[in-house]
Image (spheres, rainbow, N blue to C red):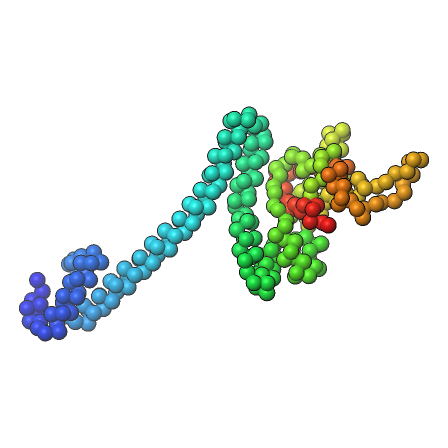
Length: 270
């Protein structure tokens, strides 16, 4: 024991006791190097308490982050389990299974639903300002949205559902039902001729939209003598179930780059 301890009396004993308690509580230990003077003991007590608080705060923050990640990851695992069950029970084709699984992981990484729900719950004035930052990467890449009002951007961006297609996949095929229009966010896509080994004759650049031409093309009314009477697209929404794709669009094989798209349902076009 330190010989100075025997000489301590009065308030000095409380300081020594406090130093002993803090050293024991923080599990620092009583090594070869220890405090001897009153100033050293006060400094060590302060430093040990500060270290415990810092370590506890850091551990708590890390634990919360891991719990949040595990919760989100658990949602993805539950969806994958359901997909595996469908794959086994209903003999889902392997190619389709891989596409669905890739889509689930893509949506999970983008975390679109949580962001959209968060923005919806904000007051209107804050909603517009926050939405501009959240959806900036979207409307900056799409020329159609750049010159639109903030209110329009705040309305349409949550309605844009992201999807991804691998090289060689058809985005839609001639004769398919028209359900949405597409905005090309990244990658490459184009109109092709399936009857001629998918030769591309129209290339889509990043930021452009396509799929509207199918609505327009399917709304053309032809007279009895096969002459075009004009385009009747004023009431197309009332017969949207009858619309079908006029063209075929796919992601090219040559580039090993996935095509990232934003879909906009035609119900929202009205």
